[in-house]
Image 1 (tube, rainbow, N blue to C red):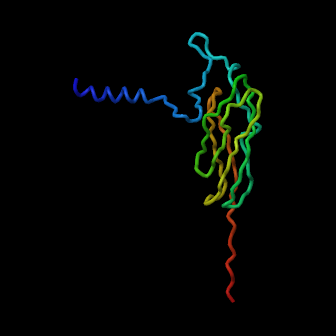
Image 2 (image 1 turned 135 degrees about the vertical axis):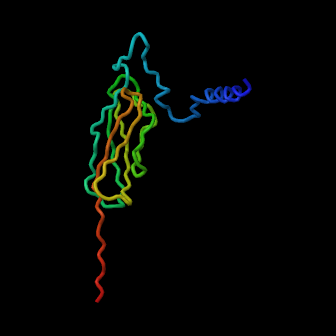
Image 3 (image 1 turned 30 degrees about the vertical axis):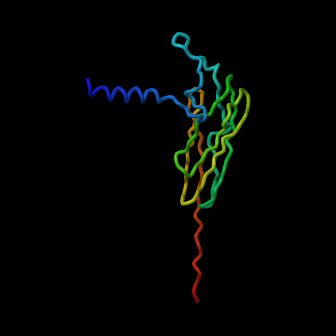
Length: 157
């Protein structure tokens, strides 16, 4: 019995500390999705995110070049769209998302910046967006062919 008490106390502390948001951005866990066990879920009552394009190709760029692209989207659903988070599969790609809810029918952008420093060849980078839509994950991609210019060696006379 004496050995169980510290573990029980730790478990209670852990459970009480979970779920605190500490003033951070809203998350999809904080969104009320109108579903019940007996009624189910009506997707028509939710937001929906439609992109003009889901893949953008920068074409050929020079190594070290920093480029950006705005992915345009619209909330085609009935409720406010909340983007809880967005992340890329590497540190060279940085997405910027709207912080405020996007009302039904409104358009907005996700700006994606890419730094090609120390990268060569053909690349595809994936950006995952977490929303209060169903499904809650959306993926957009950027592509580029990164060219490394050859330096000319001076000819000695």
